[in-house]
Image (cartoon, rainbow, N blue to C red; front, side, top):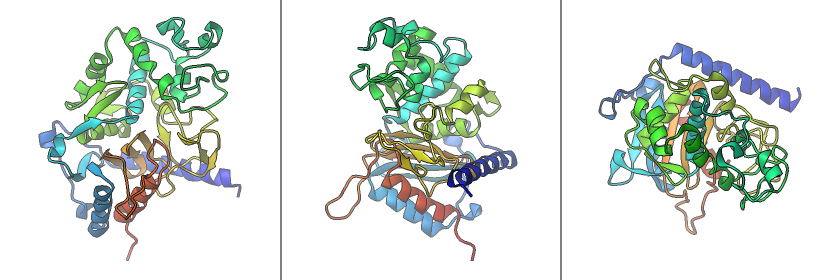
Length: 353
């Protein structure tokens, strides 16, 4: 069987399993942090000893917060900082995925269309490309990372022809959103996301967000719930929601609308963007896993097939061995992600005895 066809079948099966899991397991949505229900790893059939190895790995690699939700309930929660659950920090590029979600809500409210030119909102001169080149760059190109601009916002290629992880181009979405909705990013995010979901420890800051692990878990739970919180739709635009978590272009199949996607046949990295690497982002993780990835190992992983939301906050992961080396944790596949998931899968799916 052709390798690509085989991987496609495996991914499709994972999606079906995920949908079946969500149908069979009613998701739990916490009313407040103080009344967040818990579930014991033992009741889930998880291997406690292996789970302790996972937590120790996160601690040894400079994690500060680690949270695992099973169908919305807290299964694991650990902190390695005096602030405990109150610990909040800048989530770096994990905020890109949150921005994509907020863009979707603005689209749903008819404040913008992602096929509109960026210049419709920011005017001429927001980049260093010519006016004609600039006019060809649409909002969707910023979501796909296919603007064709370099890090100095200079023209490098026609939009849609190259994939380049370009934070400087992405950041134009924030003033664009503010123009479109007539509110600041903090005001709009609070109204359409933070307040309805109870994310009381989140705020917009310098093109990303400051959050604690539980608020990150709440956001992951919305995604696990297909855009709903309890019975309240947070995002009703199903076409945008689905497209956000699917390959947004053919240049990097492992990238949606500012989300990283596992289980694809290949991917491009943040640091080395020209060469395509064969295989999925995180081989040990479920094929349907999607993630909001930020520099320094800030992560929100969602695996619908297992009903899991996994959150990690902390400093840049390093080994504890002599001559510690940094894991690649720039937003793409990394040794840290693979080691975490290989250990986690052994804990939550222990081999039958």
